[in-house]
Image (cartoon, rainbow, N blue to C red; front, side, top):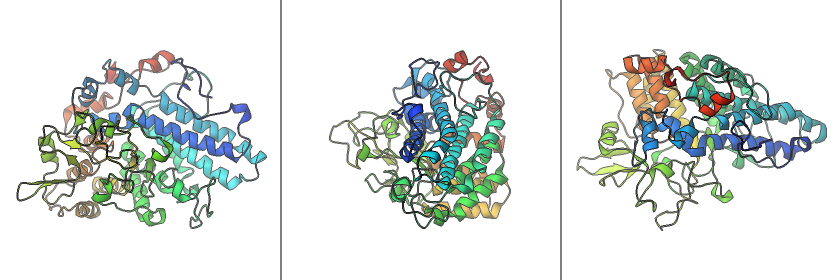
Length: 493
């Protein structure tokens, strides 16, 4: 189904489909291949050209580009640049390929029920639920990146359909409705007798060891719903969904992670492979040679002496690091009483440019200093316990539940070696500052800045940026040329 090279064809995204549609949908192997193919397309959409970090980490963020004008353009918000990287980043075809494949699965997968008795109605319901959650997630990604976008509720062949963009509020409502309809049909684990929804030792031929941190489960769905509502400014619902995730963390196997695990560079580290603690993650297993030099933040941040690359593409300036991590005892970065730097986030701090090494997975957890080409295999983790718990603190702070929000934040701070916040501290500021430190390099910074300014409303320039839709990326010229129903975002006209 994924065809030609014409830029008008929305299906010119690389696919794992081996056979044509007429010969598919016959047995459970077709289900497995198609379902995993959708997840593969989603991983590609996030990783290609390091999109996840271009969208979320660079703009108005803490990183500075070195000898990369295209990256610095993103940092400075010049998204109408003619740079190839930015033009490709503006193209949403990758994400619509995911939506189209998910729609196709929903429309055609029932046919396997007629041909393969191994595939039961209960499995089919769970698989369709996964695809609807994937759709909801992708529409959330589209809405936070581009704002107003078209909604596809069925699959298409050939060229992009000429559909008008729906408002960002309509898109987020559609995404929420898709996930809400199926969230409680999903298991906590795939391939475990202990799961209350799907009690079986195998799912699609494998145990939960293979599927944990790979497939969207119930906690994944609730996490996405929390973020959809936070983006919409509906913090009451965001708190409800985030509360559910934390309250059911044990049932889903997720828990707080210490800094030693977060920054572990070996094959037992948090960012290596698929982990049960990854509420939403996209692994690149070295065993399948699925890593590479692109699609990992290490390709932008690492350099000598950690890898053979002479200079990083992006780095955090010394003065900014000291300004951000300005409290004694912080396990991520601190300067002790003797003036010695203690950090697990940065290397070569005394050099010209500190190297951000928090996420640092090379091949099978091996050193890259042997001069060989770095081959990165780190997992793209969208959410983990600390992230959703801090979103929970954010929601409760906005709702005026000061005591609960403070307790959540203080526990997060305690886990990182920090003291409790004082009574006169701005709670909203403190929550977002902790997210800034904890989630650095994980693709959240720009989206946090947007939510912060929507809450505080104390920066006239940023409020103007919001009003003019300058917080979104421009729509690509390809999309505009191929769909006359679309209009460029106001700010980028």
